[in-house]
Amino acid sequence: MNAESGSGASRRPAPPRRASSRVAPPHRSAARTREHVLAVAGQAFYADGIHATGIDAIASRAGVATMTLYRVFASKDDLVAAYVEDSGKRYRALLELAAAPHARTPRERILAVFDAFAEDIGSGSCRGCPFLMVLAEYPDPDSPAHVAAVAHKAWLRDLFRALVGELASTTPIRDPQALGDQLALLAEGVYGSMQALGPHGPAAHGRATARALLDAARVPQ
Image 1 (cartoon, rainbow, N blue to C red):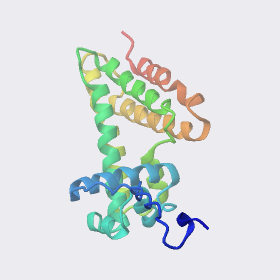
Image 2: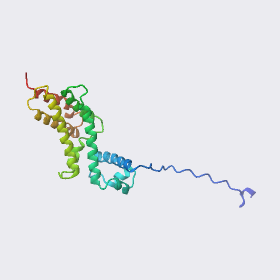
Image 3: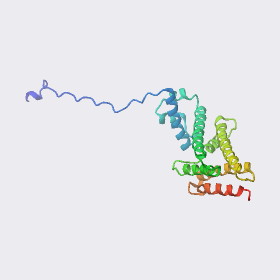
Image 4: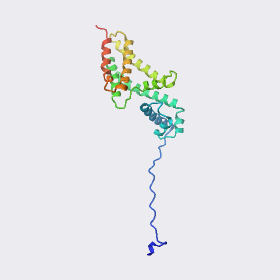
């Protein structure tokens, strides 16, 4: 036995420990945490359904502890109400932009709203109207989620009525209020049909149908 193989032989130094590949989660303020959780919850609620998505699943997807989630949202109902409100803000911003004057006629602005619908349903991420989904999952008319969803539907109806009112100031219309309601009903049909038959089914004819309604409502001169 040589000297190096004996009990007193020198040993190679142990290799240095590899640094952990785990990265600590970023520190967020309460406001940023709330915003992050709401974004994650919104994606989950829209894709998988509200009742089918639990708080623990949302916390896991968001990378936060369940107790952290409850510090920014007191309950799941609060989170759902915030989701509906946030969805409403995003849709209102989209449609207000589409309906903005920009030197266009009221008729062109009405049709631009349906162009915005067409772009949304053709985006590849649209499953249908989030507010109709909320109403289906929360049929109680007194629940905050139901109330918020109805408020968005009323806002959209008011938008069409306002645009038709502007149109009627320059173009004779048989029944402006009825035309506003018909356009609101068409918008519901676009999203309802998209959910069942996809973006290339009847939903693809939203703009053409809106144009036909506008033409039919004019008083012949």
